[in-house]
Each structure stands twice: as structure tokens, then as C-alpha cells.
Picture (cartoon, rainbow, N blue to C red):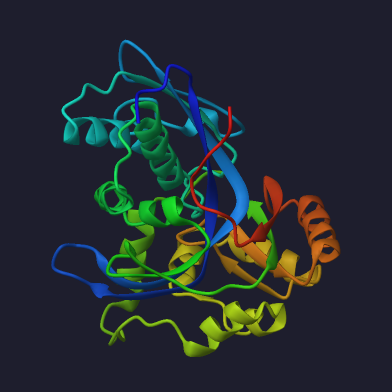
Length: 303
């Protein structure tokens, strides 16, 4: 492939963890995970354009919360890919942000994966998929899944992926005011678990079977997030959001990842509209999004 002279735009999905099992802290500071990821139809788009220097801009509801310096995972992705290929990261990255920031839906990770694919395409590198996934793992635990999408079991610290079958499901997501720091939530998990025996993390066969079946009632009975007590401890107001969604007919409710976005599994599109409307009226959240799953991973959009 030769370098592109026109911009490249990549669309990338948010995720929800239908099972997040957390093990004890490891010597490297990370926690072992059994993380069942499901990509949902709530997307960011990252556009890469040839430039004289590496720059980042952002638009969208939470744009003011997105760092525009080298700490942004999109910028880091460009730098790592360029360095591996002996290039300078001469690219402008524009993020159209729709995934909540610091919301437990891997929005920053999604942008890192999207920028990586966009730069690889822009620069005509045709990097093998396994190498792209290796760079994703270097960027962060959730970044590989953002590239792959669909449904997968993540082990290790979440970056070792095994695809799993998944039927179609409908969701409502409630966005909270402000974010939650993932490291802070893990520290609270450790504090709450102090003095207890933490089992090895595993995904239950019942959950994997429910996910494959496409039966929302079966999946609702098996959803679980080991970080939810920690997130609720740091942000007790989230309990009112969970209760509002359940009261409106959601089949199940849980904190998404490290939060504070909350996820509601619903029976169908009609139920999604009802639950979203009730949540919007409840005063317990800033905004809602309706979405379906599974969704494809990072995808280059046609020009």
C-alpha cells in the first residue's frame, strides 16, 4: 500500500462488560481479569490527516474533557506506530466524540484503536493484525477489544482476547455527571476486599451460553460486575440511576466497567425507548443512549 493523500476516518464502538470478574492485585499492580466484552452501537470517529506535526482536536458532548496532548491514547497510538516504522508522526487526529469520557465504556481506548488503524491506513503500512493488537495491548488493557469488536473474553489484564459467540441484544446507557478514575475504582475494590480471599476470575458457562443464545432474560440473570460495589462506594448516587432503570422495566442493570455510566439490558427497541425516557425524566443522569450489540470493531469508513 502507498500513503494516502486524503484523510482516513475510522469508526470505533463503545463496549459494555457483561461479566467483569476481578482477581487479586498482581505484583505488577494490575489485576487478573475475566472480562466478557460486548461492543455496542455507540461510536466515536477518528479522522487522520497528513500534517506538519502531531496534533489532536475533538468535538462532541464531552470534548472539553478530552486531553489534546500526548497523553491522549490516539496520539500515543500514532507515536508508537510511527516509531516502529521509522517515521515521524506527522498527522492531525480529529476525534468526533460520542462515547462518554471516563464513563467505563472504553472511550479513550476506542480512540486509541481508531487512531492506530487510521494512521496505518493513511501511511500505507498494511501492518499485520497481530502487530496492531500488540500495539493496542501496549496502549492499554481495553484497546485490543476496541480494534476487534463483536464479543470476546478478555483474560490476563483484559488484553488477551478469545472471540465468543453472541446473539443480538438491546441496551440503554445512562451517562452520569463527571467521570470515575479507573485506577481509583480498582483501589476501592482492593480496599473493600481487604482481608478476604479473592477467587481466580472466571466467566461463568451460564453467562457465555446466555450470550450466545440471544435470550435477554437468560443474559439478565447472569450479568455481573465485580467493580460495581467499588463504583457505588465512590459514587452512591448511581444506585438511584440503577433503580430508576429497573423501575422502568429494564431486565437488568449494572455499572458499565469502572463506571460511572450505567447499563440497562432491555427486551427490545420498544422497551429501550421506554427505559430511556424514564431515565431522562428521573433526574438521575445527564443523558441516555440507546444501542444494540454486538457491533463491529474499528472500521475504516469509505471516503
